[in-house]
Image (cartoon, rainbow, N blue to C red):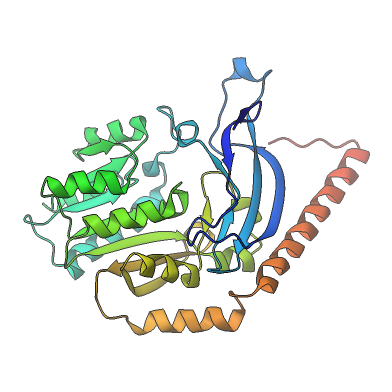
Length: 323
C-alpha cells in the first residue's frame, strides 16, 4: 500500500505460525518512524506516518504488529543508529564476544557471522582475538564504518537465500550472533530457516531481543515501534524455532533494553534447566492466555490517559513543554 502515510502493508496472519486468530491488544494510532529524522528544511511537510497496532496470536502467543513498513524505508543509507555510540552497549557486547570465544573454544580456523552487525561494534572483538568474522547488515553507512575497523561486511538483508549462497561458498559459522534483529525481520520464518541453513552442525546461534514479559510488566508501550515487528516470549520463540528443527538449549535474562532474553540455539544440543524454568514461569504468569495481554492494554490506556490529563493541566496553566 502506498499513500500519504508511505509504503506499508497490512498483515492479518501471524508472522510465526500463519494463524488467523489474532486478538487486538494496542492501537497507538499513526506515528512516524522512530529513526525517521527529517532535515530542518523539510519540517513543513513533516514525516510520513504509519499505523502502529499490536495484536497477539491465540495459536502460538506471539505479540506482533499488524502493519509492515517497507524495509527500504527503514534501513536507508543514512540510517542514523550506530551501535558504537553507546559505551554501555560496547562493553555488553565485548563481554558477550569473549564469553563465546571461551565457551565455544573458537580459533583462527572458525568463523563467526553476525546478522545486523551495524558498525562492527561486536565483531571487532572477534577480529582482535584472531577469529575470522563476517558481518551482514542492510544499512550502507554503518556497514562502511564496520569495514573501516577491519570487519568485512555484506550489505544486504539476511535471508534463507543469502544463507544458501554463503553455505555454497563453504562459509558455515561455528557461531552466529543476531542481536535485536529477529524481531525486525519482515519474514520471520525465512529468517529462522536461514539460521538453520547456515549454522555449522556443531555450532550455536546467540540471539538477543527485548523480552515480552518485561515489556508488559513495566508497561513499556513506548518501546513499540515500526522496526520492531515481533515481541517474543520464550513460549512463542520455542514454537518458532522448533518449526525449523532448531533447539533453544539455554536462555538468559538480561537487563538491556528494558529487559531482554538471550537465546542459545543449536541443531541438537540438550536443553539446560534454564529453558524449562522460564517456560514454567511464563505458564504461571499466563503468557498463553488473552488476559495477560488485555491487562497490558488496560495499563497502557490508563498511562496514556494520565499523560493527557497532565498535559491538559499544564496547558491550562500556560506552561510549555520543550523536547
